[in-house]
Amino acid sequence: MKASILLVEDEADLGNVIRQYLEISDFDVTWFQHSTQALEHVRVHLDKYHIVLLDVSMPDMDGFTLAQHIVQIRPDMPFLFLTARNERSDKLYGLKIGADDYITKPFDIDELVLRIRNIIKRNFTAVEPSSPRNYIERGDVRFYKDSLRLTIGGNESMLTPREAELLEFLFRHENKVLRREEILVQLWGDNDYFLGRSLDVFVSRLRKHLGKSGVVSIENVYGVGFIFKVMNISSSQ
Image 1 (cartoon, rainbow, N blue to C red):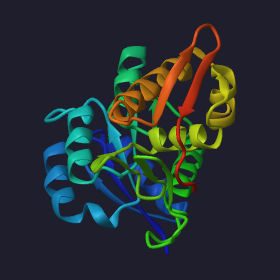
Image 2: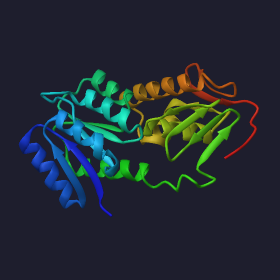
Image 3: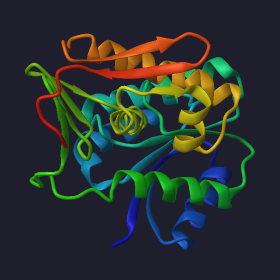
Image 4: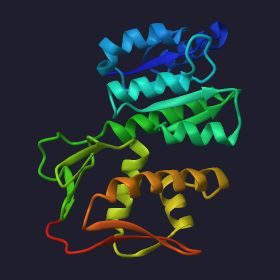
């Protein structure tokens, strides 16, 4: 079955090129040039899509705002920003609200296709939710890897795909000192300033969630990285 993509891009020429190339690459594409129209569509049809591609600078509603509406409707929906804005603050904000990636125009269309495939593969190769190995549990914390849910003492939160990816990595290396460089390279293949700042955002958000737990915490190791501390483990994966 073909993966389905929702594209929101107001530039007619660029939108046509992206849509046609993605269709040639064996994707089903639904394209909107207006954010408000796209939002009305996703309120009803968002479950049919595997990923959303959003232009940041739109005339009626910017891509950041549209993304926040999409996250409210379906918290586990992967999305990727396409933008001519190259400011670090914009990139960090996009990742903070849950974006899986942020691609600056002009971009290589083949690279876009590869990034889309990687995101879809990472998010839609899960086992069925009923599988007994679908979660990791430590004390009062239960992390459902495939549905991106985190429950702590009965309180449930939804994680972004990158937050979930990082949390699973931390669970695999619990009670060990992890260097920032190690996390960046193993998870995202590089160690640069932008990814480092993104890591700080994800760690901060996970730390806020885990602050409700009496068992699990993320602690800084000054000048080195982090330690994912787990106390009184009562059950395992």
